[in-house]
Picture 1 (cartoon, rainbow, N blue to C red):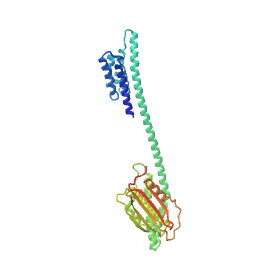
Picture 2 (picture 1 turned 90 degrees about the vertical axis):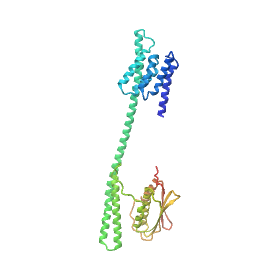
Picture 3 (picture 1 turned 135 degrees about the vertical axis):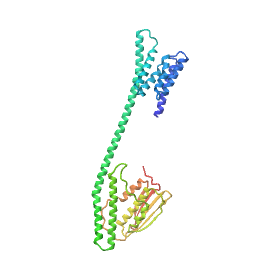
Picture 4 (picture 1 turned 120 degrees about the vertical axis):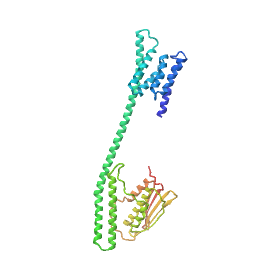
Length: 366
């Protein structure tokens, strides 16, 4: 838009300068007309070659007295040329042409009037040009200041986020890491004190799970403590290749039918893994002795569908510990960000089902 406006302005200025010759205001023959038109056409070069525009306008100024093209070209020189010497020469030559173009100089009064006319016209053109130059520089400076202010605000916000992340990491370490470490130690002590093989195996499972949790927690703390492109990378995230290991270590009656294509997006694989993990955790907590069926496949060639269904519990439930109940909410938020859906429902027979649906491409929502 700005470019088109500049083109229209240039065409308008050329037309005004050409009108100087076409109407014969200062010309008396074909030569003078041609010189005026050449000076007017030279204004098309004023943005890239302002000194050339001045040079093309000077013949018409000296021979015909037509000042329009010369004054416009001089104003452009004052706007775009940084050399003081070049501006001074262009101003002096234009002043001389304007002074000599006075109709008649027959007395001192005429000479003074001619000088005043030349000074005011050439000086006015230079003043307008320099004012325009200053305005452009001021606008650029204001834009730079605005960019600097935005960058400063962004850095301040980033610093605040980094500080909050570090604070959160410290709190997580103090509150969670200590408790998980105690679980690991207590499970190891239980393995030594008892002789029942089943209890030992259970204690060993608890110890291993606690140790794995502690390792992942510390890795997450490193991510929280670090900000920017140098942030500590997460440990390798689980994929479908780790799903079998998760199912085998579940100590549950699990039947799995997973038919998903190779090369599935990493975010989709991770979402499937985390959903199965959450489903198995819920079975351990709320449905002891239940049978679990895990099915996963692609519907209509574009939607990944995962279902984790457990039957009604058959064993005694362990005492329930108060939890934040954020597992399903976290899964729902994750799938929503990936453009999918998550739902859960309880059956009349005591069964429970969770279902995940994701686009095959795994594109995130804006």
